[in-house]
Image (cartoon, rainbow, N blue to C red; front, top):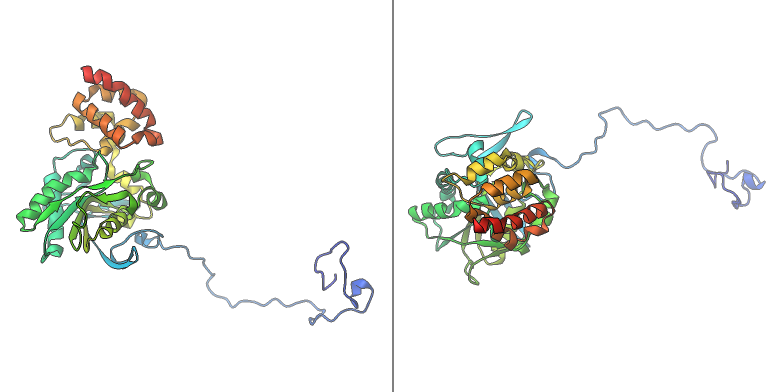
Amino acid sequence: MCPHHPLPQVGAQHPAGCAAAGGAPARTGRSDGPRRRRLRPLGPPRVRRGPRLVRGLGIPGLHRPGRHLLGGQRVSTERHAVAQLASHGRGWKLQGPSRAHPVTLPRYARFKYGDSTHVDRFAQALVGISLPALQGTQGPLYVTSSGYGFTPPAAAALLEPAVAALRRAGLDARPFHTHRDSVTPADYATLGPDERSLALCADQLHPALPPDALRGATVLGLDDVVVTGVHERALELALRRDGAARVLHAYLVDASEAACSPQVESWLNGPAGTDPAALLAAAHSGSFTPNSRFLKAVLRLPAAQRARVLASLPPGLVAWMLEGAQRDRMDLVPDLADGMDALLASAPTTATA
């Protein structure tokens, strides 16, 4: 074999003196004998290490509490939670409960679909974990929940009782709505970190306040759960963009340990969303507060089940659902399109009932 052409080549031009060209063998600087393979010293095999998944801290794009760069500014994100979701064997468990920690899995799941039985206790618990960090706050304390358009999420029900509790504690608490002008293309609880980042950003969130109202202010954001922190980051960016000097986040459940499996949020929400009987029981209870998760759960039911539920709901509730679905453009969400058609079809019957 030619040292200048290690692999046979058709029509290759060999330099003068090359044995393949008929001349004397060229000096290659290596021995004609067998080459000795260089052995690596024994030791543990090399391992290509991927991103750390412990507590979700190594996943790119996740938002975590502590000091970091946000929007080009060095800020400190403050996070407080009533309950922690912790790994337990091959699954997860919610730590607690106690008198100061009223959040249990059944209560939380019912709350997500409109049961307001424990809303006052939940709100008081959120205030309780936030007050130590709010001592010494100068001026008004602005309070908001997660962003939404027309149909509120479950977390919006926490705003009014939390503000009342903050005022009883001596703070000048002022609630406001953070408007969201985008549509989530699927059930947010089932999305991974990248999909959540694509579905939500700070440009879609707008505090419904006069210009400069947040300039130099402290803001407390209330929500039911944090997993990846995508919404937390978007909200904090939007608030600081409008001038907030300090932002605190308070949650019923901190599930950030499960950030590598964010679909655990769907498990936390429980099976009520696919159970027509549970949805009807919630809607007919005396403590029902309609929200977007309830509305979308009804729209996602199989056709026959959805028809039975819509026929059994109070006419006023169906009218609210139709208005909310239209104003929030739920017709743009693929898995809600059939439900939107059914809701539109049921509206005339409901209106004349």
